[in-house]
Length: 260
Length: 352
Image (cartoon, rainbow over all chains, first blue to last red; front, side):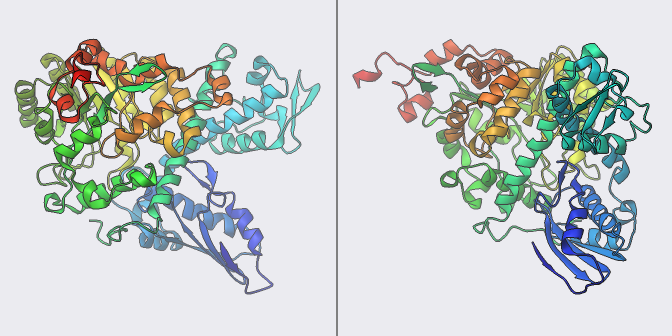
């Protein structure tokens, strides 16, 4: 990834990259920075240009749209940034997505033929990511010595991911846990709207209900399955990415101009 | 047959095609994009020295296919799963009639499946009857993401699809192979959604549904449906070649499938010519789980488990008597052509 700094007033490249790190590929639930999608960050004082590309030219336009608009919003959330523009490269709809996102148009107005709106797709992928992240969080709590019964009874107010702490027995006993798996899970379960208040039960079935104690094992296994599915798709994307950018790839290949 | 350490495994490749993507057969840009996308899957999961060039990949013909499948006895039998795509390809990509060219030459080696598309209405019903009469098909492949005119796909749980499933049941076509897998350009990703299998499978308990490509990238939805519907099977095409360059991931997927479906409902398929059983069978047979995966899933890819996955499960579905086949293959046309008499233990094979 290359980058250039043009001004001392604006943000730094590490600041921008840290914000972009919060943006995930919605199908894989991994950071676009970690996945190597971000090609270039250019700083022009309080204006920032981000260029990115995806593993396949035909990667769902809706996914590409989500990543582009999330990247813009995350970078613009930096106080030192006034405007962020994003450019998608090497995609069959690169010009429509780049133009639409930067013009702050809606996905539906940019792709009138698309079936299903971005919000609906995002919600269903967020839900899968929630279940996948739950697997790591449950493992961490089991490792820390909590019982299944204690885990399913946890409410949002019983955990403090920023301190790496979980409280059981009516809050009288604090147990220290690794911060990351819990923090990542809490972030996603809150994003789905399933957990909103301190009273809400923290862990859920894939359908979104509290987990009956006798179904802990089943839900734990289904959480593992969701995790395996997401990383499995990551492996396919990764292999296609290698095939696509292989220097020996026949020249006839490439996004076609005419998609009608 | 796959042979190692005295173990013999009869291999039935559950998913093969004899396709034609030559330029003269392409009538829509989607046809070119489709074969290009297939080619990415091919090169993405094939050992470099076994990769084909694009021109041979477009069309390989029946002779080469016979040799790739059976020449070194990598596979013993194979099941043709047609893919019509007649909006993209003039004669179709691989229709039952195209696949029949080879299947009818070696009927003892191939199972020939048909296809239906509920959007074809009455004409489609009549064609399904024709397929049964002409080829006595036992199964169909359905491709819910196929484009047809203005339509960009259909669902297996629609009223129209149910009429066709009823027709299948009446005709004794009781194996329904549904392509539910990775997005293939230019087809719509959501048309590969697996959710429609649930309703279809519970509404037609006498039909068996084989979800090809185990629903990737929706393995989770697929496994959860299959765990509740005993007539739902998983076809390994696309997952299998991960054993080559993503072995850890392959192990995890096998772990999940064995956990949720069990060893009796998983079916090997190469998706030839996407991948070639010529090398793929050995790669899958040599795959091992890590110690961590063995602990996590409590399973092993033992010879007994692999024997089921590589042949016995699909043999059970299609009423194939493996022992009788072994005997038949001591002297059938394929064995004569490739000198496999010894391999199948023909009594006079060593006398030559």
